[in-house]
Image (tube, rainbow over all chains, first blue to last red; front, side):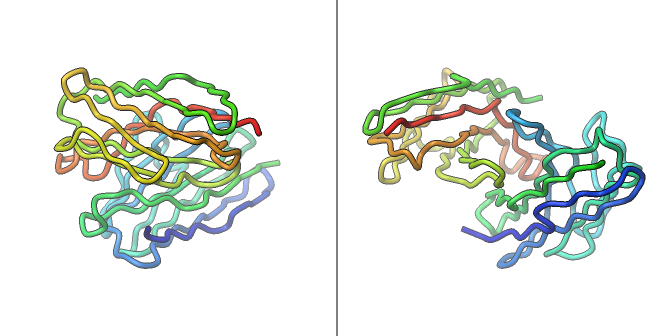
Length: 116
Length: 115
């Protein structure tokens, strides 16, 4: 299957700082990338849908000013958690999708964010 | 919107036994149903998927069945091995709809295979 690279795999930061997470599709051009949040022992919760060159579409209840998404190219999307607080600590996962990639969502390995 | 229910939430089997996980969906327009395996601390990995134009698909020890009329689909793992232990998620998508690629996930099943 296709490869989606997500970095960093783990980040620990102080409260009030911002953290950027990168998601790259390595072997196909992703027209759409998705960002999920996952709490322990729970399912994936979609945060936003990101299309290259346009503004991200956020799910209800997700603060767009808190979670900034940039999808500047067909192979790179970034999620920036601004002014992080302990309640933002979670596992963040991205995925990449394209019609030419057989309509399949390929997931990154996830980023464990811990805010102290 | 689409709602996907997954059962059971936990499943414990002996090595060599079969495991079955079931999901139901609410939107009859859904036409793509992937299954993902997620190991601890990792991202989900696609293990098998099925589209609404077929009723069954098999890949070695893994099979998926789809009943469009009843709106449910199931994952079957035969001859389970300890390395099959993980969390499994089903999902549904209206492929070709306005929400391109958007998946609705089930709640997940923690599968434990005992040696």
